[in-house]
Length: 338
Image 1 (cartoon, rainbow, N blue to C red):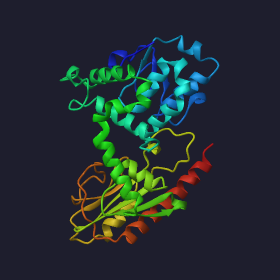
Image 2 (image 1 turned 90 degrees about the vertical axis):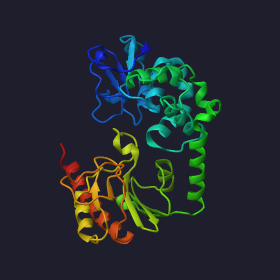
Image 3 (image 1 turned 60 degrees about the vertical axis):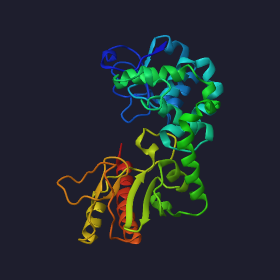
Image 4 (image 1 turned 30 degrees about the vertical axis):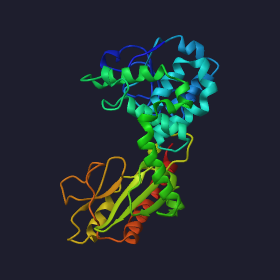
């Protein structure tokens, strides 16, 4: 079996599809939303789906039907799922290290220093500025760049899981920034309040957190982050990254589109606030952005933030009310499903 990065030429070729979704004909082993992964193999990570397949009694016969594995994007979980499928006899002994790196990559969970460093290496390998194989990738389409990066990393597996030090120059700066932010989180530079019933964490600080630190500091599936600045408070409501996937083992909360909360908060804002509340299609789910009213109520996740005139208590109360109502409605729908 060999790996080939997905292109439209492979749409009608029978193959194994790891971590991807819209790749045409084949056996899906993916946790992406809308996947067709066989129910007996479903798990929270695509890596774990592949491991379940390899642990099943009939896996040699199933793999014998395929000579091609593909993926339609490039990331750590997908890379590790590919390596695991290509190395079925080796992979089970490395399962803990594989899982730690995949969780760091897809869920932004600080599972271990080596796992986070490995994920940073994977991200760097596709960079035209940082990658050790960048000279092979100029002006190439994404699929060809990802093919080159994936092949280079597969050649370094599994030892790279345990020895990320050899690519220290790729991860040192970003990893050091993570450690510095983690130190600020631990020394009390942020305040966290938990609302367990609504699975909401409220995080307040004078500096913005990144995904790893937000997930370390907070317990909730929804995380309201406010940053105090001399110009006022910024606000963003995040959903944990794993909620986006087809999760079957972890406890989850619904991902609500908080349109009513946005409208209520906009009604309460001062006319001098210089911005407005809007939702995104994923996460952050609710944001106060610098631009004013618009025809659509949906904004981009990275649009510049504005400074709200509202207090944290007010924003927190409105969001809690909306989450309580929407969670109750979601529970009723679940009870009424056949």
